[in-house]
Image (cartoon, rainbow, N blue to C red; front, side):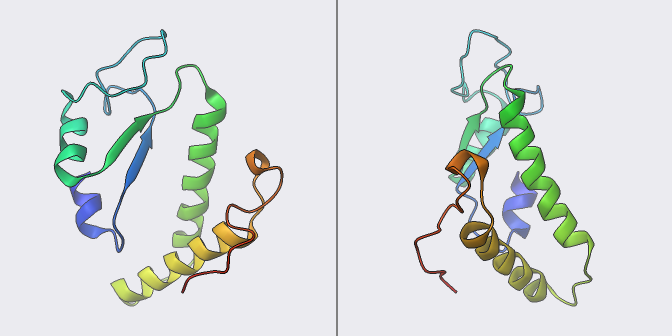
Length: 121
Protein backbone atom coordinates (compact mmCIF):
# COMPACT_ATOMS: atom_id res chain seq x y z
CA UNK A 1 0.00 0.00 0.00
CA UNK A 2 2.87 2.33 0.75
CA UNK A 3 4.32 1.84 -2.75
CA UNK A 4 0.91 2.48 -4.33
CA UNK A 5 0.56 5.69 -2.32
CA UNK A 6 4.04 6.82 -3.36
CA UNK A 7 3.51 6.11 -7.08
CA UNK A 8 -0.15 7.05 -7.53
CA UNK A 9 -0.64 10.38 -9.30
CA UNK A 10 -3.62 11.06 -7.00
CA UNK A 11 -4.54 10.84 -3.31
CA UNK A 12 -5.87 7.39 -2.42
CA UNK A 13 -8.82 7.92 -0.08
CA UNK A 14 -10.43 4.48 0.24
CA UNK A 15 -9.44 0.90 -0.48
CA UNK A 16 -11.97 -1.91 -0.88
CA UNK A 17 -10.52 -5.41 -0.46
CA UNK A 18 -11.73 -8.94 0.00
CA UNK A 19 -11.16 -10.76 3.28
CA UNK A 20 -7.95 -12.44 2.17
CA UNK A 21 -5.22 -12.89 4.75
CA UNK A 22 -3.10 -10.38 2.80
CA UNK A 23 -5.54 -7.64 3.79
CA UNK A 24 -7.18 -8.56 7.09
CA UNK A 25 -7.22 -10.73 10.16
CA UNK A 26 -11.03 -11.02 9.91
CA UNK A 27 -11.86 -14.52 8.68
CA UNK A 28 -15.48 -14.85 9.66
CA UNK A 29 -18.65 -15.57 7.76
CA UNK A 30 -20.56 -13.77 10.50
CA UNK A 31 -20.38 -10.62 8.41
CA UNK A 32 -17.89 -8.54 10.40
CA UNK A 33 -16.66 -6.01 7.86
CA UNK A 34 -14.83 -3.49 9.99
CA UNK A 35 -11.08 -4.11 9.84
CA UNK A 36 -9.56 -4.80 13.26
CA UNK A 37 -6.77 -2.28 12.86
CA UNK A 38 -4.17 -4.81 14.03
CA UNK A 39 -3.31 -6.28 10.62
CA UNK A 40 -0.21 -4.74 8.91
CA UNK A 41 -2.33 -3.68 5.90
CA UNK A 42 -4.79 -1.90 8.21
CA UNK A 43 -1.93 -0.19 10.02
CA UNK A 44 -0.35 0.97 6.76
CA UNK A 45 -3.68 2.36 5.56
CA UNK A 46 -4.15 4.19 8.87
CA UNK A 47 -0.64 5.64 8.68
CA UNK A 48 -1.38 6.95 5.17
CA UNK A 49 -4.84 8.29 6.06
CA UNK A 50 -6.60 5.76 3.81
CA UNK A 51 -9.94 4.22 4.75
CA UNK A 52 -9.84 0.41 4.42
CA UNK A 53 -13.14 -1.35 3.75
CA UNK A 54 -13.86 -5.06 3.42
CA UNK A 55 -16.40 -6.48 0.99
CA UNK A 56 -19.19 -8.58 2.47
CA UNK A 57 -18.23 -12.23 3.02
CA UNK A 58 -19.53 -14.67 0.41
CA UNK A 59 -20.47 -11.86 -1.99
CA UNK A 60 -18.90 -12.77 -5.33
CA UNK A 61 -20.90 -9.97 -6.97
CA UNK A 62 -18.89 -7.31 -5.15
CA UNK A 63 -15.59 -9.04 -5.80
CA UNK A 64 -16.52 -9.36 -9.48
CA UNK A 65 -17.28 -5.65 -9.65
CA UNK A 66 -13.87 -4.81 -8.18
CA UNK A 67 -12.10 -7.28 -10.50
CA UNK A 68 -13.96 -5.94 -13.54
CA UNK A 69 -12.94 -2.36 -12.70
CA UNK A 70 -9.32 -3.40 -12.11
CA UNK A 71 -9.40 -5.30 -15.41
CA UNK A 72 -10.58 -2.20 -17.24
CA UNK A 73 -7.78 -0.11 -15.76
CA UNK A 74 -5.24 -2.84 -16.61
CA UNK A 75 -6.49 -2.94 -20.19
CA UNK A 76 -6.21 0.84 -20.56
CA UNK A 77 -2.67 0.76 -19.19
CA UNK A 78 -1.58 -2.25 -21.25
CA UNK A 79 -2.77 -0.90 -24.60
CA UNK A 80 -0.50 2.12 -24.64
CA UNK A 81 3.08 3.16 -23.96
CA UNK A 82 3.74 6.09 -21.67
CA UNK A 83 6.64 8.49 -22.20
CA UNK A 84 6.43 9.91 -18.69
CA UNK A 85 4.59 9.78 -15.40
CA UNK A 86 2.71 12.88 -16.51
CA UNK A 87 1.56 11.10 -19.67
CA UNK A 88 0.32 8.16 -17.54
CA UNK A 89 -1.43 10.55 -15.15
CA UNK A 90 -3.26 12.29 -18.03
CA UNK A 91 -4.40 8.91 -19.41
CA UNK A 92 -5.75 7.86 -16.02
CA UNK A 93 -7.54 11.19 -15.57
CA UNK A 94 -9.17 10.86 -19.00
CA UNK A 95 -10.27 7.31 -18.20
CA UNK A 96 -11.70 8.32 -14.82
CA UNK A 97 -13.63 11.13 -16.51
CA UNK A 98 -14.93 8.71 -19.14
CA UNK A 99 -15.84 6.12 -16.50
CA UNK A 100 -17.60 8.60 -14.21
CA UNK A 101 -19.51 10.51 -16.88
CA UNK A 102 -20.14 8.14 -19.80
CA UNK A 103 -19.99 4.44 -18.85
CA UNK A 104 -23.36 3.16 -17.57
CA UNK A 105 -23.30 0.99 -14.43
CA UNK A 106 -25.83 -1.76 -13.71
CA UNK A 107 -25.86 -0.88 -9.99
CA UNK A 108 -26.91 2.67 -10.92
CA UNK A 109 -29.82 1.58 -13.14
CA UNK A 110 -27.68 1.84 -16.28
CA UNK A 111 -26.55 5.40 -15.62
CA UNK A 112 -23.02 6.66 -15.24
CA UNK A 113 -21.89 7.59 -11.70
CA UNK A 114 -21.79 11.33 -12.39
CA UNK A 115 -24.24 11.50 -15.30
CA UNK A 116 -25.77 14.85 -14.37
CA UNK A 117 -22.57 16.59 -13.30
CA UNK A 118 -20.18 18.29 -15.64
CA UNK A 119 -16.70 16.75 -15.86
CA UNK A 120 -13.92 18.41 -13.89
CA UNK A 121 -10.72 18.71 -15.87
